[in-house]
Image (cartoon, rainbow, N blue to C red; front, side):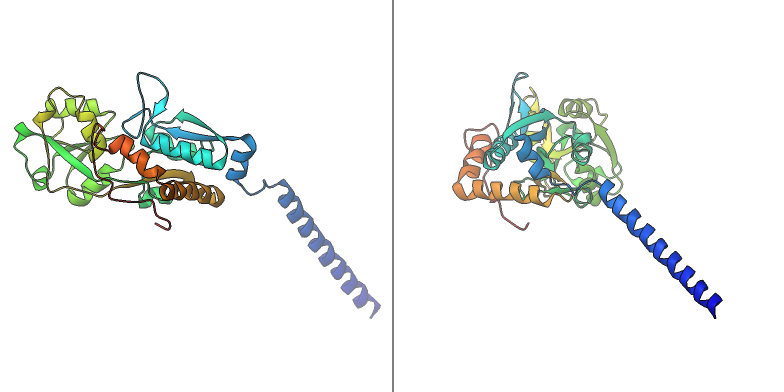
Length: 284
């Protein structure tokens, strides 16, 4: 009988010791783990919002003669920083590095006509949509191509790091996608017959065509028009920061500031005037 009692006591002591060890290990892991991220709190503590921008995406984010960044996205993000009560710092980020810059904490926001796609939404969050614009395809008029169907199996250029390739393949599954690094490279590719077509954002494309001496040689394919909506990119899971950015943009819409900024860059006196057919809206 006594032996059985001792055995039970020993077993209980071992069980208690095992449980205590497990609880201690859990406590140590909790103490060692970093606190949950709150990027908005970090931004306010440092007094500065760091935003990644593109250097050559007029009229959204670009530099005039190597100077300070300007553009539609730049003006909007200035308004966001003002409403947060912090300074704004803008740093250049390559288009192919926008997502990694957010994920690695190199920037707080990405503001460079950043297109919302299901693939990107798996990696980053987006603010409310602050721009709508279709993607289009141009060809050299001399090619004789007048319909998207005629581009089946042909080489179509898209800018590296953009989203036009997926839209093209949705419509032309047999298209050969060729990535290019600049609008100038795309125009040269069309002239030299290295490309049969070039797909890009309608507004940015028309803005860059204005720099070309022979812009009239290009033809916009009428039966290709894929919608595109853009927002500010935000690190995944930073709910407080996203809410603050959304509130700022919605306040700019309500005050009329957003419409005024749009008019500066896209109004009747702009390089490429277009009508504002949208408003910033919550829960998009």
